[in-house]
Amino acid sequence: MDFALSTEQLDLAEAERAWLHKHDPILERRESIDESPARLTAAMRKHVAESGLAGLLTSAVGATHVDLLVLAETHGWAGSALPLAEMAIAARLLEDIGHSSAEDAAESTEIVVPVPPAPDLHVRVDGDTLRVVGRSAPITGLMDADRIVVVSQTDDGAEVAAVIRVEAIEVTVLDTLDLLRSWAVADIDVTLESGDWATLSTGSAAALSDQLATFRAVDALGCADRLFTMAIDYAGQRSQFGQPIGSFQAVKHHLANMALWVEASRSTLWRAALALDGDDPGERAAAVAAAVAYACKSSGDTGQLALQIHGGIGFTWEHDVHLLIRRIKVDELLDGTVADHRRRVVDLHAAG
Image (tube, rainbow, N blue to C red; front, side):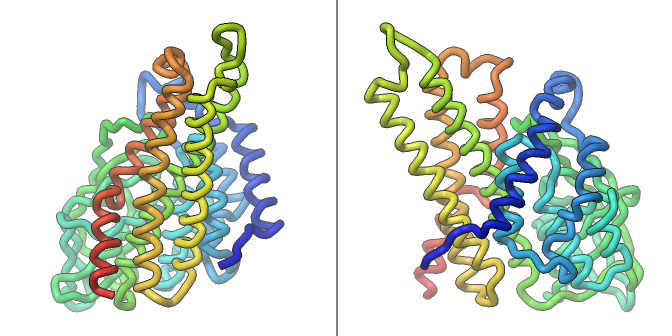
């Protein structure tokens, strides 16, 4: 299959990277990194509202998951706390169920994030009302969210989406390795009227899980690409025995492996994004599982080699290497671990 990003997609990524360079998320985060969890800034909210990026997947914009991928990778590269992919997915969900806040989610400063199915989350339909009780999986951006969209199966097997204001739930902030984003869980105990929930088509919950897993891996890829670039720069600047360390064969091999892992991960994730835009659930599941398993593992390996190339300075608190590695490690663990997705590849192959 031949595939390449269009000029428009490349321009979109470049424009977003320029904004992130101007509002450097890691530099801004350094001011409070020892004191409090990462929060979304007013500039981030304004940027999303003015750019309309949260509405990318809605019918009014008509963008694809590949369009969203190039932006999500850019935010991973920059270490941004803005959950752009999650917001775009949530805006599309609101549109799909015809919720009254759909337009606000796509065009305002309101932050809406999706909540995927979780073992501890229980949903029951009672006439025209929906009862949602339990604890969610970890969610990024929840600390700053205005609403959440819970997608789950009910006790009788139907799939529903429920829109809940954050004031109605209890948010517990988690202490994680990731210092560039906040992570939290939602403890929910609400009863919703018909206007705030709707039935979804069968397979919607699985599709949401695949979307979130894909963009978690895309975020890891962005971090890995940044670490690769940093390693190249450092290898050209750091000298030993009177010559740059980048001239040593061992370092060249490390950089070559990093380049391979980054480019191969990007290719597999492009394939997964194309499958997300398709209509074949089996093809989507296989493409996503393979891409996430490979990209998350490769991103972690890229981070470890970047740390080795940087040597002693890479271990310091002041250097950004550890911040990106920490973020990759959390990406590896959430929305399915590398082992989970590898097992899924095997199971899908056996079933097919």
